[in-house]
Length: 235
Ligand SMILES: [Zn+2]
Image (spheres, rainbow, N blue to C red):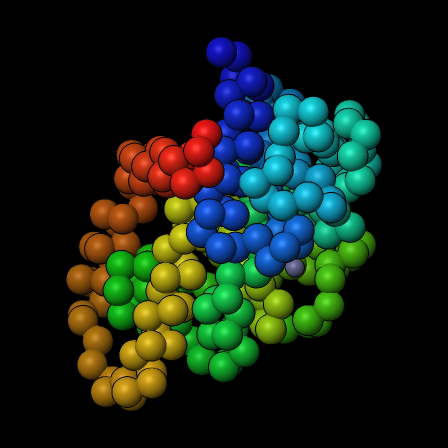
């Protein structure tokens, strides 16, 4: 299989996982991956379909000006998020924007994410919050503002809207998304009883962060999530 065919297959599989994880919010989520060998182009899920409905036929190819290079599907108006992140982050090869329930609820509290579990250790201190608007990101300037808020991190909470997650690979971005949603859910659950202020030493948190962000960990867990989603959908 060529690198391009592999990237397109992983885009389809990422969509299955993101829908199976409950991140779809009907048709509103989107995911993209940079075209191997052509870093100024990316493949992206189209508008009007669920994450689990991406096919070889409906994938769009888009450039960094957010213009359609190939494909006839309707594009997401929020593709500027993807273009502007790919433009300023050469290390990023995959971008997800979606509306995970607990991440949105947590974003609306205004609290900072704490290292209460493994996902919390990954993202505490590494989770900027975008507060310029709760509306859709529909032009280049707004996309650039999200990319600026993201900075050098791999996730940004969009207050009362959703999340933008990225990674060096689709595997990394998808697993990041799952782990961020879980961390937000755990903090919301723990907050119901009340947080006592205890935290493990920062060096312990950093050591755990290092362990759970190894590339092999992302791939192993992504591959599992793909198998699990395919079983669930009878594929
Ligand atoms: Zn959105």
